[in-house]
Amino acid sequence: MSNEIQWAFGHPSERAEATAGDSTLDRISLRDHIVEAEIGAFQAERGTTQRIRFNIVVEVRPAAACLDDDVDRILSYDKVTDAIAHELAEERLNLLETLAERVAERILLEPPAARVFVRIEKLDRGPGALGVEIVRAAHPRVQAMPEDRPHPQVVYLSNAAIASPHLSAWIDQLEAEHRPTILCVGPADVPAPQAGATLAQRRIDLLAIEQNAWVLAGRDARCVVVNSRTELDWAMRHDQISVWAPSKIVLDAVDGPSASPRDALALVLWFARQMQAADMVVIGEELPDAPDLPLRAVASDVRVL
Image (cartoon, rainbow, N blue to C red; front, side, top):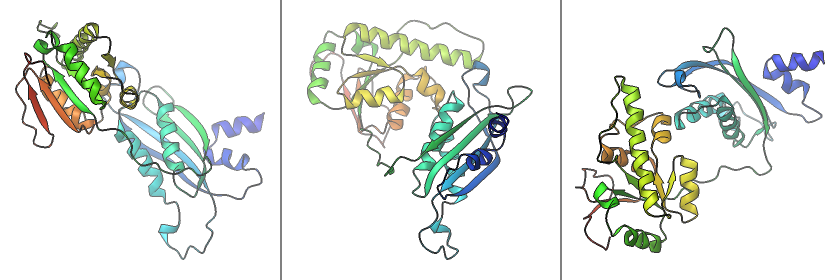
């Protein structure tokens, strides 16, 4: 038991050594790597950064040939720090557990990596360090898969379009195209509550958009309100029309939109770029200026898109 306690609180390299078994593996390690990041599920952790400490050990298969002192023939330390930086930049996360899983998964995509120990600790949330440690092994024939996310068409509906008698006919047409489709809306034509704090007002304005998304969903059952990138990807692959509820993706974005939620069309343009949309249809509003994205305007009083 004393050894197990020592492994639990020692550096991951001690656990790696203690659980190595009979296999012959080399190890590289990253000790006390500290970065500033915005992470955490509590409201107090939003809008501010905190220090996160990483300790990582990677067990690697010995090189089959002479290294010749060539950095290209090893798993470089840069691959470990790059994995951390990539996952922190990908999106804002709530859980250290999620971050640890993603960092481990990215490191294990490197061919020499056989097993990885990842310990991540928050240094500013209390009198001590609060953290998580995981151990993950590479699966046989693990390879980096090419990016296969679909490129959707994003359809923005004005309030006039939501109320239009042609709504069901438009959705019939979108369904018949069998293209990944995401519907987006702005807030309803009613004043939103006003708050004195900027961050509070931002949330209120995002929730106003989500309320209108549910209004749209109530008009046609084929419109399913979705708030996460994972759900959007699943829906696009399964021929389901989604309605974007923006709060989670906007608030979790590392490089969030400069547009205010009150400028709904500008916010949807940001979202379309994040989703690498193939094109965007705007129903019932004038087209914005977006030379990087194919745009098409449709009047809210016509039946055919």
